[in-house]
Length: 94
Image (cartoon, rainbow, N blue to C red; front, top):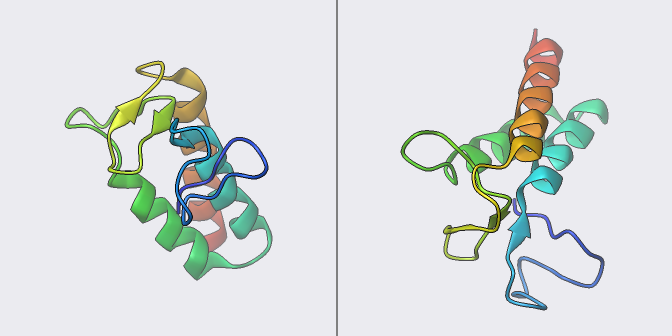
């Protein structure tokens, strides 16, 4: 699941400004789903996000709609959100 940074954009409808989805927001979605107890959805979203990493398992700031890395690379905020989401989901899954 790719999540846009600004309201009014939708990954399913295509880009509003051709910039792509914001990686940190997509990992925040995983964390929110986990906190809401929707663990299957959270796990699926996290696994999908893993597919957007490059061959070194690094993430850019944004993810293009074809899966390409856009924006700042590598992006520390995206990686911090990944760590937080993965740890929280792991703890929730026991």
